[in-house]
Amino acid sequence: MCFMLGSMYMVCKQMKPFNPILGETFQGYWPDGTKIYIEHISHHPPISYFLVEHPDGLYKFEGSYEYTARLTNLGNSVTGRQVGLNRI
Image (cartoon, rainbow, N blue to C red; front, side, top):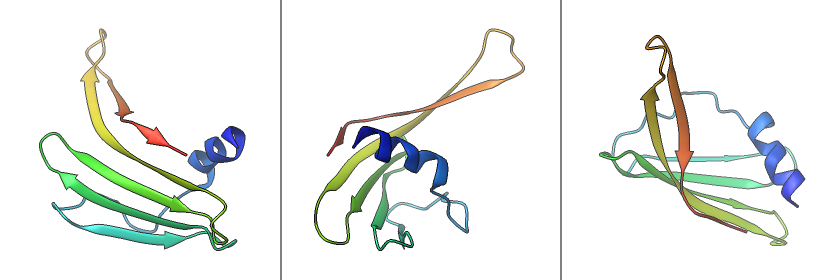
């Protein structure tokens, strides 16, 4: 299960950038019918909630991400990460 969900990071893409205003949503699906829903729930700090559902209801993957960034010690690059709780 972890391998499958981890691989979604590598294969999931969207056709437009998700830089939403507060309350904007994104809905999509993969070719196998798995559905994904994302909603921007906070602007400062930027937080998005997501839900991934198996087409036959075998699992739900949900959680939220706060997007953080910081300058590195070198001063010429930025490190970004997603912080939040996830539940399968």
